[in-house]
View 1: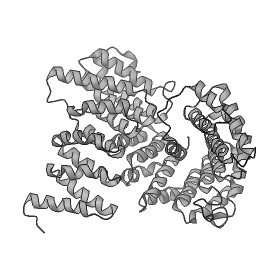
View 2: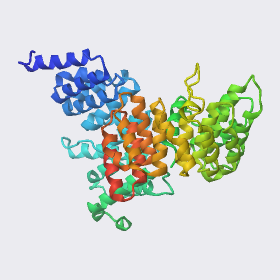
View 3: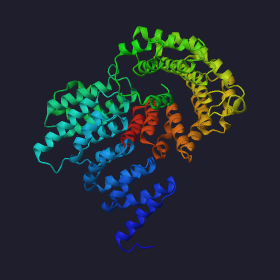
View 4: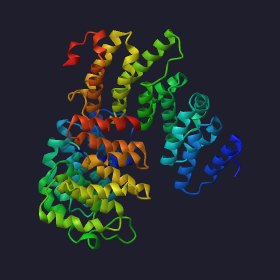
Length: 231
Length: 282
């Protein structure tokens, strides 16, 4: 075994993925490769997303998220040639990394993608973009774009997308504190998702209700005038 | 709770149709086009999917279901497909569709196994307790009778999975029903024996049936793991939370299963644990 240099070890791990003959073997090889989180494995991990093997794809998604920023540009470059399954996984990676370069993809995916699992992953991602490195104006613009996008996703026809919107709105809320009017609107949106009259699916209501309770616990309502929130 | 399994099947069967938005009026118009089976097929699906509450909907769906009984060998296939979708749609329409129960009971005796399957699921969805006896009758004889594989077809003699699921959903746990279901635990097809375990878990609440389904989450075949996920979700069996998250299957299916757990959770605290697990799968 050549494990003396990182390159040798990485090559061995990649060869194990390429040589896997069964789903189990592919899963194990992918987990081993993903654990390295080595940018040198990007091409291989991205290819695994196209294999229609959910177990291996989950492992590859984890690896790509761990690799983080170096994975963003290659993923964006490959997105168009992916099949739906792979696109869903790629959107999930972009959502997990939370890099602002993925914002436009997430917006478009939530608004337009025909596959619910892609819209779901996008909604999740729009709530958890990492904006620390940006200037105040850019950060504010990105946050408001996320909110607008999630707000539209609230009327999605699939329950799981609305569920993800509720989770996304909760996560986004703290970033909007400088915009009390927007937080008020966000609370209104969550209330609508928690209300039986406007939301037919129980689990979506449960999730929106949980979001409202948590935001209430965080005293997000202190900065804004929503007396009903504490009800 | 609506049948999660049916929802999934329907989504697969109609996935090519999603994305061509029409209005409720347009769907009703198309359902009335008696000589255009494919328009009616889509319209019937649309009205169920969108839980149409227009007063004309039930009447038109009933017509579509009844036309199946008019025997016309040349167009039977198409009329049957429309009738199947009409039955599925009626199953989604709740209280308003209860007037369709006698017709659905009749469809349970149709020659077409696909229509019998759709009718069984619809009767389960509608909570039609009067269906318990005819459903149980169709299952009498166990794996060697109605559960026998038909030559030259993937189908069993009876749509056992749907019949078992409907009995579980209807919740009538008398000894006759339990006796009819139990032999199917030994059916050679895991999805059928899973359906028996699911029905018994719903009817008796005994943990052994839930544990049996959980064990199937480690089955080598993805298709079997998927069916176990849907079965556990339909039962809302909370102890399966960890195993559901750990099984190797698509997140979409795990989320459907977890939805069942969250909606059946007895307290906000136990629901919150499920919701947290769901968030991780988005």
